Amino acid sequence: MSGLTRVVLSTVLAGVLLSAQGVAQEKVDNYAVQLPVTLAGEGPWYRLDVPMALHFAARYGDLRDLRVFNAEGQSLAYALVAGQGEARDSQQEHALKWFPLYAEQADSVGTANLRVQRNSSGTLIELLDEPEGEAKPALLRGWVLDASALDAALVSLKLDWAGGQDGFQRFSIEASDDLQAWQPWGTGHLARLAFEGERVEQRQVELPGRQARYLRLLWQSPRQAPQLTAVSVRSQRSDHVPAPLVWSEPLLATRSADGHYQWQLPLALPLQRLQVELSQANTLAPVRVSGRREGKGGWQSLSQGLLYRLPENGMEIRQDELPLPGWAVQQLRLQIDERGGGLGSETPQIKVALRATQVVFLQRGTPPYRLALGRAGAESAALPLTTLIPGYQPQRLAQLGKAHVHVQDGKLQQHEQTADANSQWRRWGLWLVLLLGVGLLALMALSLLRRPSTD
Image 1 (cartoon, rainbow, N blue to C red):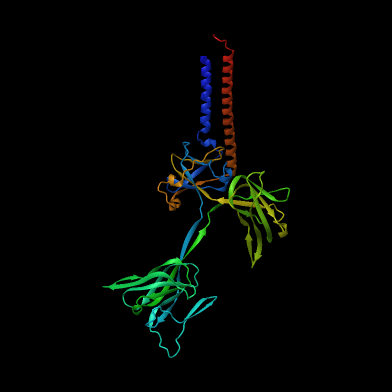
Image 2 (cartoon, rainbow, N blue to C red):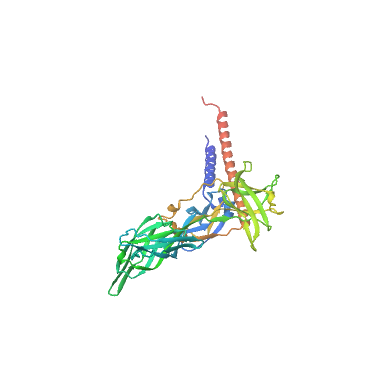
């Protein structure tokens, strides 16, 4: 092989390697969308809410092509955090009515002659007088507490009292919904101690966090039992807060040949909710929503329901949203039952929503920082949040610094065109170098075949 051939072959191979390295290297210019990021608060970790416009501009629904770069062109470590629903507990204190339970000396159960009446305003418990000629009970055995107006779990009980001896007053706690069957809820005690002008009190009792209409307190030592002067209970309600959503701008429909409305999204996304614009008053429309990933696939039913905008008691009530199952779809179709009158003469607009996502990244290098996405063939570089932030605890997320990105649709499109053009030129350049290399190798082989044998 001649020296010139070796030089040419080496040059071709070096060009191929450099071209492949340039394609594989992580550069901000490889991404269609590049937006400046501003930081606020204390770092070095920052969280950024991803608006719907960036979901639309990405190449993949899971944002695998998203990156954050610094001024030096370095890609920063980051994690993607999807919004999650959560259960929030709220507590409230309620004053209760109480009713004494008197018993005969030999009656260890402590039952009483009670009359119970229920009405729309609650429950009335009345202690009935004993018939004449019978000895009236003289021993205070305990108390019945009326919690029938509450429909939440009972978590603690607070008592105040007068009389009785200083010290500890122990009692058992029972619960019932009908004043007949009683379930044990444990024991409690009150404490009031005084010495040299100092006082120590224990007035609160923990409850097991279950619902009950009535509570019964039975003193272990009825002769020393105090007289209650105030009773309150703390209830706890657990409410489920759904995951936060991010909404799109209004999307205009096209009408298909069969009369249905359709919408085309830039890519398949796991949609959670759909909002349909009801432009006319007194609108009533039974609808069905279908979706599909590709333009040629079959339609799958996503949701159905009744949309309306109607007057009621001098006000307007509106139902314009439908839940979606979270399947990844790129096309939506709205079928309207015309027996309800339809949605009017104007072409309807919709908004779509998906679960909000946050980008948490580790600041490094110098600003300005840029968020980039929109690269075909990209693989996810996201880390688990527990890896990105060692010792991470869920409550820490809200304490991180905040980052903000300003989205301008025109700028997104301009960057996308430039990046696509650059990507195309790199792709064609690589193919050109590869073809030149193959051609030179073919010429070398042909030259060797034509060379006369030395034998």
